[in-house]
Amino acid sequence: MRRHYGKASLKKIFFLFLILFVFLLAGCWDRREVNDLALIRGAGIDKKQNGKMELTVLLYIPKGGSGSEQGMEGSGGGGIMQTVIRSAQGNTIAEAMSILQEKLPRQIFWSHCEVFIFNEAIAKEGIAEDVDFFIRMPELRERSQLFISKERARKILSLLPPLERDLAEVVRELGEEKIGMTVTTKDFAEMLVSEAGDTAIPWIKILPPIEGQEEKRTIAYITGTAIFKRDKMVGKINDSVTRGLLWLRDEVKYSTITVTPRGAKGYVSMKLLRANTKILPKIKNGKWEVVLKAEADDDIMQNTTDLDVTNPIVVKALEQQLKSQLAKRVNETLKEVQKDMKADVFGFADAFHREYPEIWKKEKDRWNEIFPNVKVTIVPKIKIKRQGMQSGHPLISSKKGNGE
Image 1: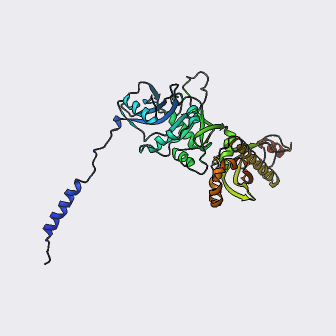
Image 2: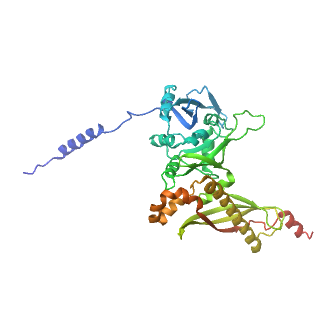
């Protein structure tokens, strides 16, 4: 027997369901007011003489808070942006954070943390366990950037940048400019689980303040790269060698190269427009080799010589010098990182694994012996696309035009 519902009954059932759904709504039971939070902008890890870890955090206090330790004037000139430096020690980072929370009347909030700075002493002992803590925390962003420094992390975080609101903002923006390496917590974890497991992290140091300025009124800047075997630092390379590393890793974004053309006085500066590199692994007669194919397009930015840079012969000569510069930088990097430090931060192991999976399976345990002897052949292809509005040196060109 079929049951028929009238319109009134259907409305009652509909409203009953609506009432039941209300009880399933989450609501705001777990809300956290901004005035109850201490927002972490950056964190640093140092090793104390007693063997404990020191966690230092750069806290941003939302409007209405009171920062008694450090105040930074806003760039707009109207008011104070409150920042506070706080530290705590523990056997682990998690323990130090717990002790740090006991010293703060506000709840620590990690989601705004942009950078992590590790002291060199910590880096030499290994930082995988510390990064493991940062990766496991659900509040933390995987794109937070990592840096290594010889100076204490606390000292760096205490700097008062003249342009930005805090030091964390400074080093984050420098990292995003892609002039050197940029390594996030996610990047570091991926490098650790790669076939070689070797890693690299940007190296920063404190820029000396302008004469007459307060010692803290300065910034830290990227000046090279720290090289790691697995998670332990084994050395560092300077800016020039880092450029070769970026070519090998296909991470070159910005570059300006200045050369002195052969047989001319003055300089020609060229700006990189785009670049692309490919690693081609080869195993032949038991010898492991890598062919590095590097392609780039450049523009001439400045010419202080009397050369006519619209002349195809001159352009070809400049392209050849660019190729020589590229090869020189890459070879410097290979010497310091591959031969001396024996750290595969280029991704060679992954390339061989993809191309020769069966051979790699048999030989991967010998990679530390094989890698330093891998022959690298550089095949550069560089084109100068544009020469600018002026063909030669403007003063020389104008004199020739006047018949001098």
